[in-house]
Image 1 (cartoon, rainbow, N blue to C red):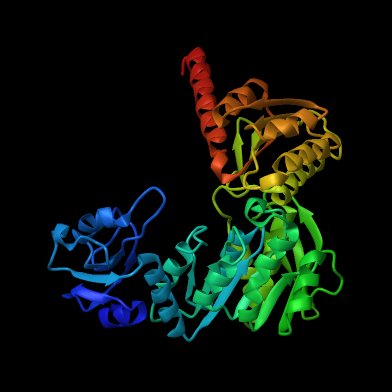
Image 2: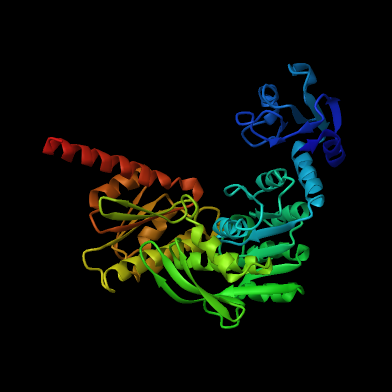
Length: 472
């Protein structure tokens, strides 16, 4: 419960009206606000929450608005209204205030790839014994993360907070609010180069978390990351990896199948068999990062095994879907050069594993959308992708978007480029056949989930026609 006097103390605001003394939570969306909650009127590029204050107060018990808000337009003067200089800053102050009053452990998760899955895996393990508060979905920015902190409950033991970054200073800003005790750095890769400009600056930005930490969990196989941490961090380091013989937490004897990845989780001179439901070598790393974090929290092998094996994955992140004997690898939430490479490697691994190392009747089809926010590196990154794929057994390559056209132009095999995901789906529908494995991936802005949506409709139409022909 949020006390109105604590809110005023945290934000430096002034109560224009004050009727409610406590609030059950915080909301920034007038459409989903619940009874008893406090509405914070944030301003965005395409909306202004102040336009929806009256709507929010139909259900909610109060609102935080900026000092320029026209109080004469307020219809619900029997509700609490707090005036502040800036509502976003007020949200940050409120979250920081609540964090200071929290006596449990805060875990911050950063890195170029795998943050959301790692955060979910950590939460899955810790939830076997503790009450965990985590950032919802991928709400990892300057709004989503502090909003998550305001959802602390009396029995919360630990917070697992994903922290995203687009430019220098983002992680430091989030850490100044969350003040994490333990930090997890998944890897360093080519992400958001439009805002950073170089891989060195990407690393520097992710490592902004270090001054706040007591312990850091890092990927020992990422030598570029490891070098940066060793130079800047003097606290306890817990490392994980597959290649590194000196990592504290490792995976041995990895075996993949269609639905399960088996490996021995090795730590503290002991090991235990893990049967993970997550596909791909990259998810082994995410699992190791989560296991390392749980180890730092005092969890044993069996507790970690339970948490890892019960987790089924995150929507739109390398989901495996089967239609008409066709396997779709639906990895459409986001993409950068590093994650794109890992997903394509998994496509090829599946083709080669399923056919004994040769293509046989199965084919690898890649439907790839533009990788956005790469700045000056955009064209080069896409051309390099096409060149690299030319050396792989990819049977068909369907590019989506103007940038991916550069990749298609460098691809030596069968390739075509389409403007939209819908067009790509129709092209895919003409060529796909039973036994094919299809990877669908692209940046969030490309909305590559539409490929499978259109494909599903086309397959349903096909089934309906066949059923009609059979008289069913």
